[in-house]
Amino acid sequence: MARIYNFSAGPSMLPEAVLLKAQQEMLDWQDSGMSVLEMSHRGKYFMAIAEAMKNDLIELLSIPENYKVLFLQGGATAQFAMIPQNILNGKSSACYVNTGAWSTSAIKEAGKYCEVKIAASSEDTAYTSIPKAEQWLLDQDAAYLHYTSNETIHGVEFNHVPEVGNLPLVCDMSSNILSRTVDINRFGIIYAGTQKNMGPAGVTVVIVREDLIGLAPKSVPSVFNYAQQAKSDSMLNTPATYNWYLLGLVLQWLKGEGGVAAIEQRNIQKAGKLYQAIDQSSLYSNPVALECRSRMNIPFVLADASLDKEFLSLAEKNGLSTLAGHRSVGGMRASIYNAMPEAGVDALIAFMAEFERTH
Ligand SMILES: *Cc1c(COP(=O)(O)O)cnc(C)c1O
Image 1: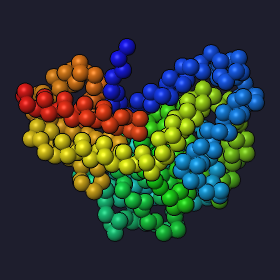
Image 2: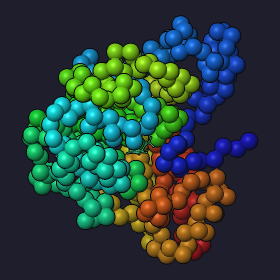
Image 3: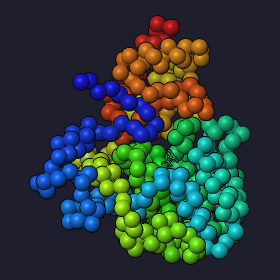
Image 4: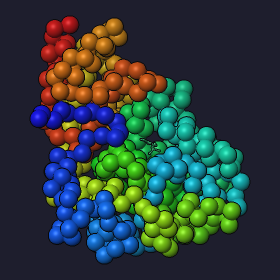
């Protein structure tokens, strides 16, 4: 069986070593005589898996002691609602930066709970840029400021953490968490669905500073309440056990690869190559401003869109899968998360060059 290079934006490629390890442990996890799938979440085996997974994440991201790390369900989309419900703290508004489709979704959901003040928006550039810091409107009376560090659909990524004064900074890091080093101390809340860069779908990592825990009104349902989830170690109800285990395997793999700083260097190398190939060609182009091009999701269009179908079907035949851009923007998109080997990027670049030569 030949494995393909899968450029899907998520769920996305997993490290082969992780899949093999899961396969090897499927029937009998470490002499327990059972599969992780069958374990009680409160039993000693699973507690050990959960503890190691959490500690590995704390180590990889250097999460300080005044933060709680939660593993929840409902994806990033559930966090769009949980954040205002948990941290408005009696305030009537929150600031949101709109850099693309995921910011827009977060804004829409937050609007159910408070007045959303748009601190900045790049909608007028069709989300191909990030508004300059001096243009941001920061209302210091708002409860927090939310932004999306990597817009998965548009391929737009912050290369810095924004300065927002005393506002708690809340970040949707779904598609670039663990891809680059980041100072957690700058944030009030970081959240990320696991299916982009951390594992399979079904877990949402939420890193919350302690002073933002315990502010939710009583009407917030227990499973959506950070304080209750933190108190019960994210086991208020049955967690997505097997997904926690797979997340743990991915984190172990990442540690073995040298951690976040090492993988960041590889990500810079992989993305740099692909952008260079796009920029040097006359068939392909990327519309995003240079300083905010994503290292994780690289959209590109063909000068002649009538070639799109053929490009995609030939790519598929060459083992390069899921390169179609999001249905809302069209064109192509190569998602090259941590688990995409450099050889996959090289194969894509070679294919693109050959396609250009023959078309
Ligand atoms: C995929 C994605 C989401 C949505 O995640 P779900 O887990 O499907 O809710 C939100 N934000 C960003 C940046 C994403 O990439």
